[in-house]
Length: 209
Image 1: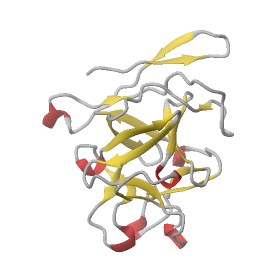
Image 2 (image 1 turned 180 degrees about the horizontal axis):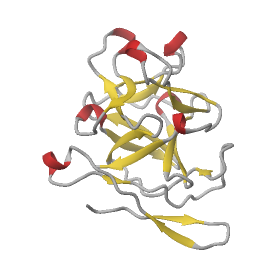
Image 3 (image 1 turned 90 degrees about the horizontal axis):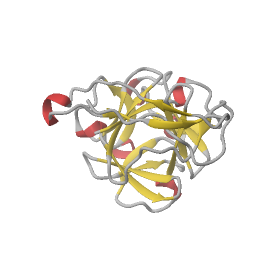
Image 4 (image 1 turned 120 degrees about the vertical axis):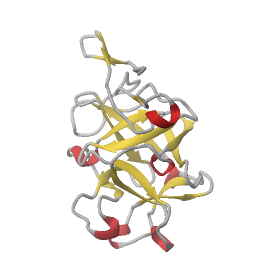
């Protein structure tokens, strides 16, 4: 398995090579395993309240296909394309592997440090539901046909301390969190609702397919 190495810039100016190892059920389908993407070199200052969280991290190809695994429950993020109505395309950290198109997202560079995520299964862009209420408030859904604005735009920030990634929603300046305490159809749903990175609920491992 090929490993992508990220260069981590320390305060002392030293460069360190970081690599991750991972497994996927997709190996049997494509002939190769997805590649874990290290939390690489950042091109701007530290952000957020968790020491070491940075923006503009390297190693992300425009048009590349990724999957995300929650650091909170070790589950991959799937788009619920069979849900109906206002929950169609809801993103949930609930899959045991990243072998299917429900768990795959194409990276669409929007300029600078901004990205959009397009679900491979339904071709729809991940959107923050700013106008929803209750448990669906600011939920992430793969439902937009185009990138219409900040509702579909995210920064993919990285945390070198654990080699994990964060999704920062530009529409409301909130980090995406996995709702571990939700139950039923919304269990482990993704919502853009955290003002800072408080722990594993906001952290993800990122894999390049």
